[in-house]
Image (tube, rainbow, N blue to C red; front, side, top):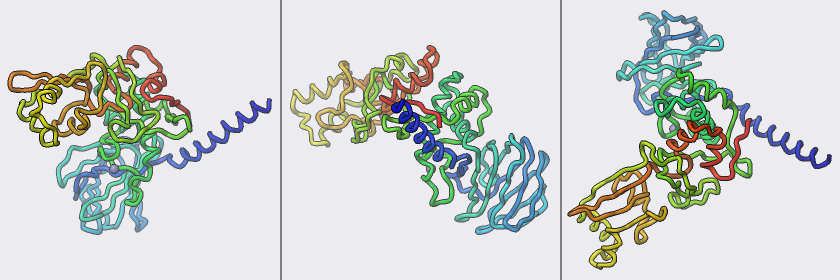
Length: 379
Ligand SMILES: [Zn+2]
């Protein structure tokens, strides 16, 4: 009985801790169009009603027919509603009314394709361009990222569940990435791509069904959920790529990646370029035995980490290869590289995960397959 009580206390203490972490992030601040210098945008409510308010306190209700044009005036912004100047101000807040609402935003200077987002918007002027923040419910943000990053690969809801959990892990671990600049994350690949609201039902279903779920390691720490396109059949140790050992990012056999779209690749390199590359790295390529090794390098028996001390990760980068998992063969006056997989190979293979989901594995089984010794918990 005592033991049960202790266990319950521990579970309670942990849940409380996790809850306090999660309760702080009901909304997140995401900077949109973060990689562009936008000087003018057009805002149109698409669904639901919105209130527009500046720091001066004037509040206007917007509806579907309202067209709000916001222009940067270097330190200030000009707000026009339906072509009439409403105000010049430092900052405008456009907040949604009601549970479900979304809007479209289109940069006019420069012209960029319009995007749709949910919830609220804050616009001010910073460094001679508009500083645009989407204040969005965390769940809506996660669904938007999943759609931006993975839509098109499958329609399997369990796969989107996994992606949503990975995205939530990233968010929890990186909430303060841009806080010194006044927001949490940007919308680019620097953080997580967030180019749209989610409007595909499989994506929203996956995101909302996994609400609050995160992946933790054996010490209950939220893990870094690294992923790549295809492992080529064996994943890679984090240590072999970045030099740092991570207990849950270790190499595993991954038959689920075999036969995927990015399972195989080939590349031809001029024989002389291949040998010169190693010569410049200080290797005596005139030595017959060494030359033989460079022209017959093989990973048939499993992944290796280097060729004569040169890390495969360096070779991959220098020759722009899809993966480090390749064999070499002499081919007339060229070398033929026959490779497997696409990406750094650490953590989860997306094509493998899709295959597992389509074969009927539970989403947590997929997660536990790719990340060693972890578990999914609900916050
Ligand atoms: Zn960022």
